[in-house]
Image (tube, rainbow over the protein chains, first blue to last red):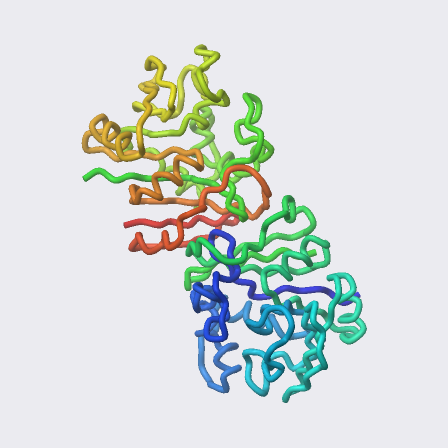
Length: 214
Length: 214
């Protein structure tokens, strides 16, 4: 069966995967870019920007593992955009411009479904009001033999973890204290016992990659 | 001036430095020994038990850095023992037997001062009702040119960090989720900015050593 994977999920040492105060200008609120600075220099990210070059060490190895074999992404609504409640601005099509980096169907979890949006490059956003289990069933149908990526944000990852739905969890610990925002680990006591393998590697960039898999 | 140091401060991935439900039989509550399993195989710990042998890799290197240059330890009352409130059992002399591993004066922070206890091997427990700043002043007088170690538990470490009193902080991240207990990071947003150096290394044992210093 296809696997359910989380990649490059960056958290502060105090367990926040995003800061407080998300806006259109600040997708991660007061965290700014600090949780993802390790990612920007990688060859993988530079290539997404259409640039050549970039680092090719352990950070890039993990960054590059994100795409292969993925047929669908599921994301929470707050990863898609800063609007809350009923959609005010239906022109909003995500933070990623006309050609988002997903290149697959993307299921956006929301209590306010709206028509799907087909973007360039193979990405289509579908908006569904569904439990993690239901969303995963839809995603697996769409993904065929391929895997499903849970793209975040923290609440979505936490809910899928709470439902024991994730087979591969790659967390990146950034040694900063955000102090506030959305925490990922609440209510997940003993999570490590659901996985058969836990591996940790520190990067020269200062972050630590922890991989849980089964 | 002498430095204020924290060593081998083990936390779960969700930021708990001790579990819930401390008792005489379970100093770390439901966490059991899980936060310190990395420490037991080290040559440093084996030697504390009077045994030879033990691991000599990165975990031992950090373990061995704990003692040299320390003139005093400050600890919270909950590290000293499981009693709360007024002392019921004055026979309690800590978890460590007649010859505790400190071999220096130890200041125990408590709202219930009691007479000092002189142990074998150079350890004397002094019980003081003092703020972190006051305790540190006493400790520095007793330590002379030597450094002061803040020995825990989590609340004590957090209060000294909140007061910006710590010069060297060695944290050991254990990739488990305790889910409950005493968290160390609350209210410490931006802590990393007080230090000039942050270094991370993963150990083959599975833990990650993060060192903040200035």
